[in-house]
Length: 224
Length: 260
Image: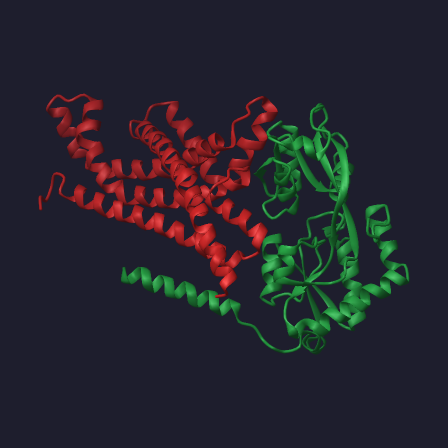
């Protein structure tokens, strides 16, 4: 590694990290919150088989899973202004990432809910609980434990997908690396560097996921 | 901690792997394999693009083909994104980049450049109803748009603009038309051909300035010296016999071969 490359990498590290903390991390957190809310709602509607709304949810999942994220970003950012909706780049990215991952996560949660044995639900009715109460106190806590690893997966993949927001002019960590590269032409070094920072962020998320799983495994069932 | 260290070592090894290179004379190697590996984007009119019958063409494609003929080999065009073009030339994956590359000092640190063969002009573009941005000096405190590798982005910044980055010229123009940014500085030839394709576009050119000299970058080093000499004598020949000027008129509508 030449001295020039080394000094470029050292100089750009704080800049990259700063955009990671300032844009990539908040974008992940906001988008994931949206995704979780959407997924929960969509999963519950399907689990409860609410007529009309259920079909609407299937339609949403069909469209979202069947089209590329990049195209969705383009339509919301560059396409919607033609019908008078002009969203700022960050907001557009946040909504698209949230609703995109929400579709996948809703299937995860629905699957988890359906894995809760029907006997439990019946037992809930037998002791006089209402449907919302059964959901809240019986089905969801168990489903959450089942869904947790997959949801962690979604969050990790979302963290990396935020780099797609660069295509609609959001200045995030990866775009910052591209911009620095536009001046110094050290793409390989800079991209490895930015990959390393993503890796560190994801490692932290993996750590949180492990902690969460340990915590959940002592919930109910086997106390440790 | 141990794991982190192992990862670091892997990364360092990868970097040093890529940094290595052969010491064989490139001109001799090109003649031996009988082809000139040319990197180009293939989506940037009029430099390098696909015509209506989907054939790769453009100013740099024709000139690059002539260069290969001059060297007595076949041209072999590789269409790759801008990002991969320079890194590919640097690592020796491609022999040369024929992609309207502007000469800058930063680039010259990493690449050997041929003699300039064109002198482009840059234009300042705003939305048709914009009356406040007329010259580059009006860019102070404004927003402009460019792709991340563009030297025009750096030019805009030097006039005090902040740059919102997108990937292509088409998106840049949308940023302006949708009022997300105020202006862009871009290559005149590209803006002209954009306006030709989109005569209805709600944009206008307010200023034309001298751009950078355009050269061919090749890999830096002693093994490419003979190649560089051959390229330069080719350029001298096409300049003298009028081929270069004719190509410029064909693709840009005007003779851009002289320094402005």
